[in-house]
Image (tube, rainbow, N blue to C red; front, side):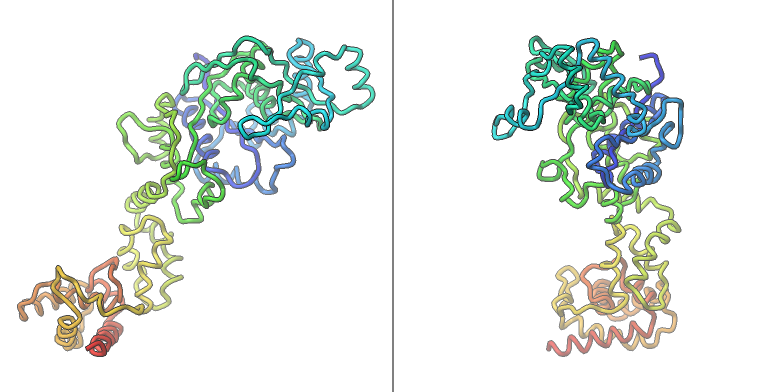
Length: 486
């Protein structure tokens, strides 16, 4: 295709942005930008019953946060506006095009009431479906005009053939052929005068010059109907790119009940925007060199939609957490500290060096909400079992640890310099004098000052942060605890 690539993201403002919608927006953005084209935003609000107040703001906020900046949209008129379907509907544009199809025999008025439509319902494979029987197609022009003049409610339906086949091409799934007998006469204009999602999409995509249509593969079954509309109007059919389904770890469709189905859910759980975008890009696409970490700019350069998969993509929280952790490790420390500080202050209320604590956890977390559980011992030593002093590799147990702590307590009392280096040097000297192994001494001390099996730093680093007074209190308490177990 020689013309400039133009893609669009056309969400319905019905709540938080689902991960699947975010991926659609991302892929549409990447396809356009990879080819030096335009990325459009169009708000599809024709389904008035499902609209959620504030949802349009969520769409704008999400696109801004993720860096998916649109070239045209409701706030950036590129000459194809309005970019909000309800505003386009008000101009009568959809009715105008629907009537063109009626004039060409490609659509017709349908006056059937709910009672008659309900009578057409049938159960197939446990599901109730309704296939319209073209009843109103046989109405004469005079009958139609009489019903319209009488104000009888109507819809406008697409007139699809019942014989033969329709073939369309998708860039991911290839040529797909369906029997025309499977094509229901879908509604184009609803009884309230609003266009259906399917019809408005085709009209707007054509009028806005969209060259590549990116959407989920749940729309594959509707594509033959779209193609017939393009052909009925004599319009060029766009390139179709259908994205694979996103499932949870149990291979079920990712739902709102999963707790991480939307972009804002993930932000609430402590994930970084950059990591989410990087991960979402890999839900159905992979680079030629199997690389996994990309900035948005690098994705623009590397993205080739022909490398997308047909198979469902599994939303793996473990993988996302790993990726988020990689972003945290690579983060500038000052930026990290600013993001970590609320979690530090929420957990520790003592006057200690928060930056030193932040340095300890930076490479040990995958998401920011993991910080409190790693550092809560700085506030107070938790209740712990004396069995924690037993470490086979260090050859320690409660009895040996009690002896070591009693021996080292006077050394710690005499030590005035409680910097990490000075403390480490002091304890190494103690170890040499006694003929012990380092771990034989460091394990009991770390356990005494933290009360934790795992800590983000060693004994002397912890002692530096809590200071001499608190260190001595904790060591003495540990001695008391161990003596009580004797």
